[in-house]
Structure formats: C-alpha cells, structure tokens
Length: 68
Image (tube, rainbow, N blue to C red; front, side, top):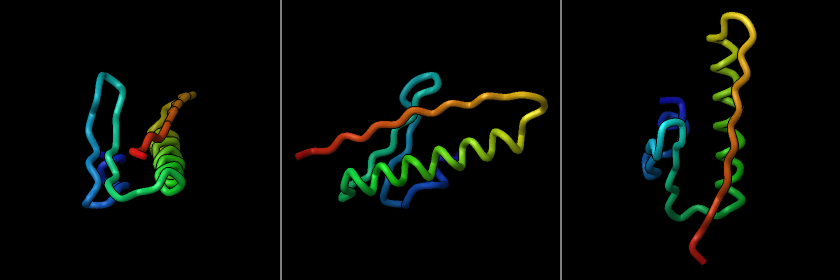
C-alpha cells in the first residue's frame, strides 16, 4: 500500500515475491527513479517506526535499471 500510494498513476507497483516489490516507471530516467526509491524508503521507515511496539528494524534495498 505504501509503495502503490507513493508512485504516479502511470507507474506500476507490484509484489514480485514474498517481500520483494517492483515499480515500473515508464518514461523515467535513472536519476529520478533513484530519487523515488529514496523517498519510498523514507516513508517505509517512518511508517515502521510509527507502528512499532518496542525495537523494530526495517531494511530496504533498491536498485534501478533502464532500457538504453
């Protein structure tokens, strides 16, 4: 939900595996995609901290790929 709400309507956010997600962002350069990934990571961490009862660690790795 956090990821889907954090991208444009023209983007496609989907679950790829158990805890793996992807976002397809047509007509988006790698620099912009990296900025979106950083913003989404910040939102995920903030939401995890708000919902945490005790000590919770949340990690998120991201990468970008484009057609060249």
